[in-house]
Image 1 (tube, rainbow, N blue to C red):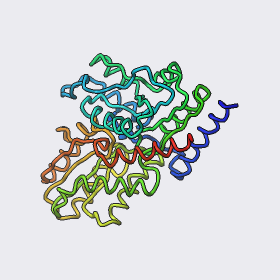
Image 2: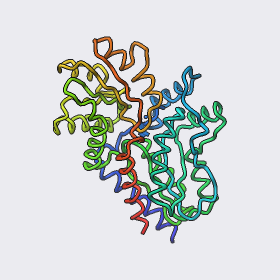
Image 3: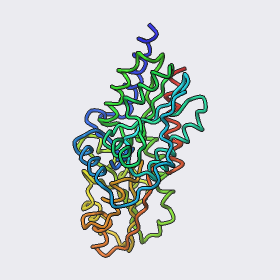
Image 4: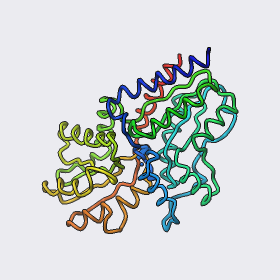
Amino acid sequence: MKKLIAAIFAITLTAACFASCGSEKKDSSPEKATEATTVEADTEAETTEAETTEAEEEADDENYETGDASLDNVRNQDGIGENELLVVSFGTSFNDSRRLTIGGIEDALEKAFPEYSVRRGFTANIIIDHVNKRDGILIDDLDASLKRAVDNGVKNLVVQPTHLMNGLEYDELTGKIAEYSDAFDKAVIGEPLLTSDDDFARVEKAVTDWTSEYDDGETAICFMGHGTEADSNAVYQKMQDLLTKDGFANYYVGTVEASPSVEDVLAKVKEGNYKRVILEPLMVVAGDHANNDMAGDEEDSWKSVFEAEGYEVKCLLRGLGENEEIRKLYIEHAQNAIDLLN
């Protein structure tokens, strides 16, 4: 009976999360904070065909330095105890960004919830395989992380995704947790970063405060999200509408894979009298998309597109996971999930 209650409890929580996101649940795709993507993603991202292609591109032989993988805590240790907080991300093979963003979120959650063992799970196996082959470091995928929890006798499992939105990957995550729910006394799932109206307002303040030093009246500040053809792509327009409504007229939001495109953002920027452009990823990590599609030297990168129009361009290669206020929001989402355990 206890296990049945736990399973029903987990499904109830999932339904509540979906309800708070409205129609976006139906078709969504992940933020994919990776670069791989929320989830962007970041971590921001989802296991869609486009994201798989993106992950494959990231896994190609790199001709650039991604940082020291040994500095990153992969959090796949045993000795978990009865309470586990599993942080699920799409993942990225950019070592420094992974440590500073996903790792930063995990560190913040560990500090906030010392009674829980914080562990990591990635959903992009191609990223996991690439990091393992290149750096000799193995990160648990979702199945491995859940099996580790079972083998370690975890009773109370809290899963906090770093996804940017409630999309397909979030749906798949809840389904996978439901498969394992009988193995735990209780299992709950926290909400993605952008779920409620308050979440949007908090993220808006976080990113505008973060870039305030560039807000001089002559600079356009442009954020690059991952984008998806699914309904959840509406989160980018919602963020744009909020920025415009709140007077941030020189802030623009676009996507790599969907709409608004870089051409759409450029057209808006050209309507103003700007001399400079700041580019920054609206993704949990600063991985392949940020380093190549945004800041790369190829002619179709965002940097090259804006430079070709005569703008002075500065790229901020940092993911949302590096922002303290964003981390606080993930902590609150995890706290809400934990509250449902009691």
